[in-house]
Length: 467
Image (spheres, rainbow, N blue to C red):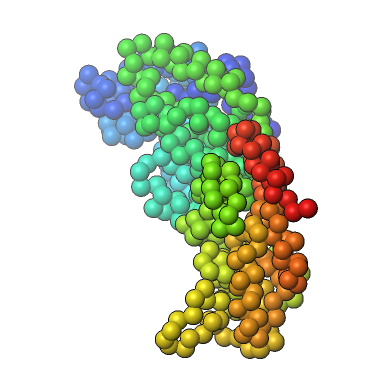
């Protein structure tokens, strides 16, 4: 590690601070809309906060709006920042070729910044001129905090990733010496955690704490690296508009330190399936009566999987992996939760799907099994979970009555409450992507579920195991 990243980390360690101080001279914050007033504003912020700032982030737009004198004021403010404090110029550039090179010369040679914010919509061509020297850095817009950010950044790509996740993955291969970081808003801690999981070593610039509503503790918990660094918490208006900017900056820096110290030691990262089930609300704790009649302290509502196409596609991969070792001609999604799962798996594997009707219509074709099938074909039943195996046995009876061979059931979660034994007694093998025990272990290790809830579910499982 060298250059910009080494300098930034040295500054953070020397000050025990992750505070990035924004310098945004909004017109309403100035006594008059002039470059001179903006210059005085910025110099006052630098002087007041340079003792606790891990970095400064002046926003070029407010200075450029004041004309050539405003640009000069920006250069003067950057020059006034102590040499040991990195300056991130907030310009969000994003052009290519000679234009990007000119923007880079402007940021580094004319204005004197150490790093910039960039829009990477045009790909690495728009980033490379800013980061070909490890002494310089860049923070690429990844998942921003503005209200309409999700219109593009949350869109799902063909490979199941969201756009912001693809940006994070691409950025990992850009630059020199780790000098390409990411911008992720503090208002979206879930997405911040997802980015950190994909980019465990990258520096993340997190605007949005304070005036925009971002929660500091949630931001730190989601965005810090395992070493307690890797995250810059930006504050602009909260400091500039305080009666005493120096005191406000010192207080926020101390708050960040205290929040960091209060965080538990890093826990093992949740595997994507266990994390996704929690994120989508597919897991509930309380008292629930299951179809089998059992009173359970946990309920798995896997019908919610259809609300997240990307995660549903990932789940289908899990099914496909199990099916690779099971002889079959057709899939049979079981009504009702198994139908969308069966469709997703069919699309993933290319294997045709049929499905048994829960009730046969008294009109039309009066088919008990819908879809294209022939007597003697091997069918693998697809369902969301298995508890006692009752639903699967009922479906198997319908499928077998239509002349189909049924010897296997594949589910996402085995609740380990006797389904395997009940199915085996009827010549059906149970295959599960995961088990409730495995999920509990993952949630417990990551601290994602309260220990008392884990213990209650384990006791329930122990009481329902078939002798």
